[in-house]
Length: 286
Ligand SMILES: [Zn+2]
Image 1: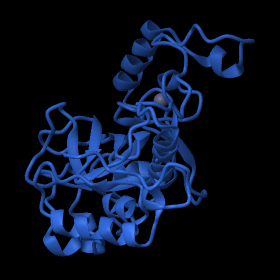
Image 2: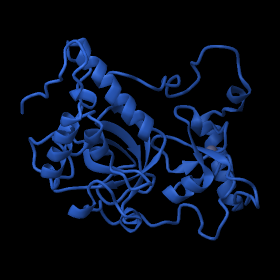
Image 3: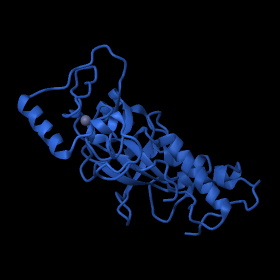
Image 4: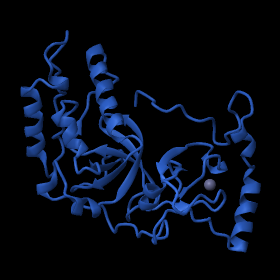
């Protein structure tokens, strides 16, 4: 809500960008031509060529699309997020029919993974660390943008029922300081929390789990976010002192999260450090 880490790329058409014409620009096609190419490819039944024995290529996805692309594809005008090809395929992105990117090695056709039936509800045992078996049962998502310490945007090319291909996601049970606060110290802490989340999550594939409530009153998806190593980012924010436990609404791990916050306070981490001019940080009263 306060820091934009990615400079928005031009407008919806992508033709207003300043500067000299680049090779990328000259490859862009008008929408009518793109549709014509799609129709032509569909009619001829062409399929992308399979790359054999090549190292994992980098492909590109957009914030909302369900396909992955080669660099320079006209569909990448607005957003362009790099991913290793196997990861794009594992997330459920299908190869673009216009730019014909390489197919991943292996037998499973890309995009063939069925979407999970519903958002997985994590068990009590797994709040701070999930086993690989449990991670496999959770929907995978690509973190396309971090808004602040506790809010991110994720892309789900094959979302479970009730979810969209792009979701604004609020981390369950944690609250990071607001950058809009007047105190410079709190603003600085908000930036530090944002940076922690950005560094750990942006551009990465995560696993999502839910709790009793699917969405908050702003329509944001409420979730626990797990990294491939099994760590829970919600819990890591508390452990490192970048958030306090948000206990206004009930959730399964309220007591565990309170304990994580208490430990960070005792250790004087992050928000709870005592060496600054206006510290310690006071969590807003709920
Ligand atoms: Zn493409």
